Image 1: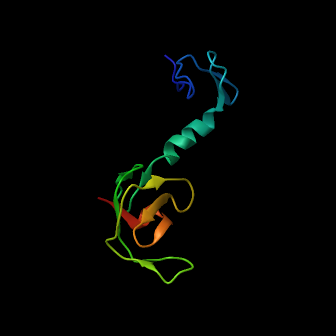
Image 2 (image 1 turned 30 degrees about the horizontal axis):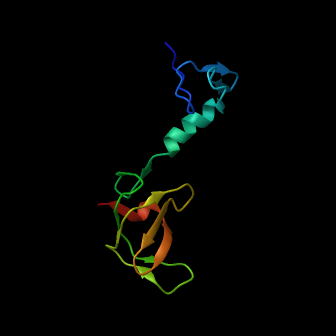
Length: 112
């Protein structure tokens, strides 16, 4: 039984290891075995109470947040619909009514 993951391109189960690389013999795709493990753990984004967030979720802001470069404030309890997860320090892209497009940190929101 092989414990290697299937190919991310064609989902072939016949992947093999060559040094630190994984290779698919069917489509010739090569990828790093260590990068595969890192992306699985980094892909999970959680809110302030530990609920797993996904694209399209609705969240509520749990703390007053000052908008950088403006005198606007995102108030506690503001609902944000249809979030998009992204990489980086501010890991949520969203659009807030009355303010516009923003990036938020997942630690300051709670899933509804």
